[in-house]
Image (cartoon, rainbow, N blue to C red; front, side, top):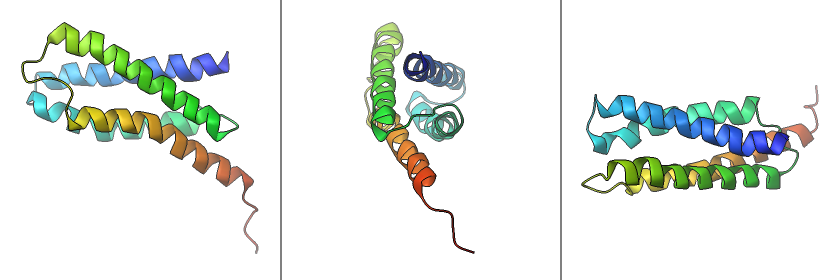
Length: 125
């Protein structure tokens, strides 16, 4: 049950947060800037979720979370952004590829860091 919550639950929620931010920003900035504005916000929110809400016991668990999150992002982006809005200048640009890479690698890096921190001996006094 925890795996479903960590993969599908958090994956969909994080995607929806980015989607909502994109809709809001669409009215305020050029479409070319939206991804670049959302990316740092998404990194902060995703890192918080990984540090506070995801508790895997192996790096492989975090890799599975990252793989599920990027799959959710790709499928939802395709149907709810690319197909729905059919952007004239296209959707798949550097910011989107960076977003997919971060969506996959951020869980692995944060998971590795958390697990490493748990296994390190306490500092000598």
